[in-house]
Image 1 (cartoon, rainbow, N blue to C red):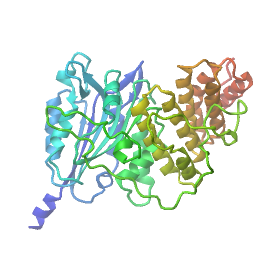
Image 2: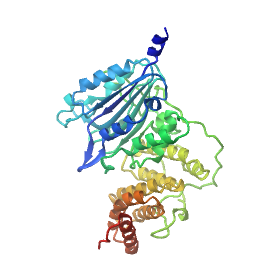
Image 3: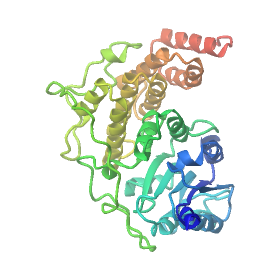
Image 4: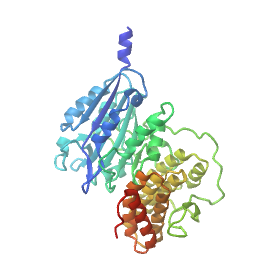
Length: 440
């Protein structure tokens, strides 16, 4: 009887690496590297359970039926289950269904070589609530991204807790190593005292990962219960009958541990583009006189988020900012000014938390985004560059500074009206960090 009870509690970890996401020969997501990193983490830590467990790695699979068989076996396990998926999302343009690209999947072979996303929900649908976690680290291509914006989420099954990120097609990528979100998930898992719950792990990972502006963070604002998020943004019913939406069980963020001090009437977090000089301390920026007009009557969340940050509750502030960014994306779209403003707020929150590496990356990304839509001498463009430059100078980790430097300098070189002395100083510092002669 004891052996039977142990067998009934058996758990499973299923790690699936789809096809790599590559844009202009730059890797956005390297699924094999992500699986290798997760493979050295003890299974008990991944599952948050000490029951006997099995682990299945699927790397380089070409046949979706092979993946389906492994998924079906994992779903049949009686104990806790973690399904991790990493790779590239695309769309079968004939049926407009999302697929996870497998090795060798092309635009013309999606229907036959990709894994239909609804298969995941179909297989997990019958599992008991509370035993299934789906972790995603994905990149969407140009065909899939509009569909994700239309649906506003990427559910797997009503019975599963779904956490993760989907980066947009415009993301330049971070090399062929472990993705930022997966790396931070592992780092937080190892460094946090005890084993945090999955929602807390996700909040810590998403709050410290170098996510590009506009990335889809799951759970979304609506699924987290953020006030003002649209209730009608759900997924349509597929032929499989799966319709996770407003009725699906969603995790709830932890309650605040202490009251947040109110800000003065009309005060909002500092916004970029109002810096007094080309190399300022962001703390000296002048707050916006009025928040941008929203498309719905939702209250302005920025005073509350800024109060959290000034009270030292940086993870909560970063998590709420990402949730509201997702909400703005649902309403205004990826390339909107509102979405860019929230990316700027995330950058300033990272600066307030002392995370100058993330702040540099975010400000640099914001500068590129604004430069794509505004002239190089626009105050907002120069303000983003100034924020990136300031945070980079505060970055004491030489390896991190050397990694972030080239992209920052490319941004500065694209701004003819930016003070050339600061470009020269930045190039001097990067040359020192890289131990190479300064080019002219």
